[in-house]
Length: 257
Image (cartoon, rainbow, N blue to C red; front, side):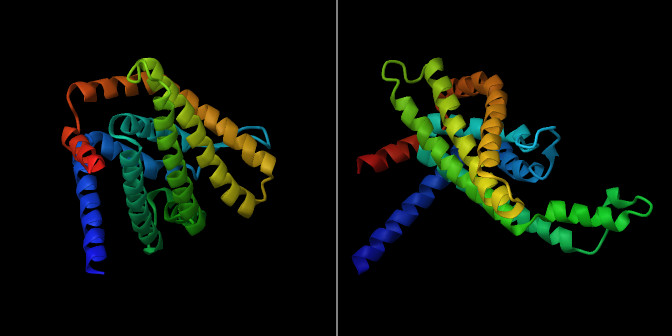
């Protein structure tokens, strides 16, 4: 029993050490933007984009969701799928923290600045409280769908990269990794969310869930496609400047043990 406990303690300590090194290795600006984008993505999803088609729906979350998956592609390429998944889980936990803060603010008595409209103060103020406070099932399902899609995106990206034997660090390899993994990841994210929220709570059909997930995926892919060359340049720059070398040495040594 003591041996098992010691081994478990060693594993936990080693994992925490790896995560600590990883957080130190990821450039702080990119990490901050990533976490902020994950939170913004869920908040902006509250606003739908007006489209005159019943079976087609998009929300403003796609404005930043493509960036989230582009960062995951860069992290997977440089640090590996396990590291990208750990960063995703960190962002999810921080997202919950922010949601708790916003929920507390929404129940504090007071008025939002935009609610001061003659005759409509109460209605507008309640609407703003509900928007920023969020609904528990939307927050929870959004976190679940993002976490699942992030894991799928990261390991799909890694698997596609393994197919490029001759030039795995080339531009073509990076583009294929990004587009394929993002397509799969974004569809998964959209479909899980629409299936568990839109269908369960708002009566969408399966066809609506699938079509909206596909079109949402396409719109997000177009946005990411514009900036994927930038992601490739970031990876090349990280390789050149040996970003995260201490972390990469650490996981290399762990894998050899």
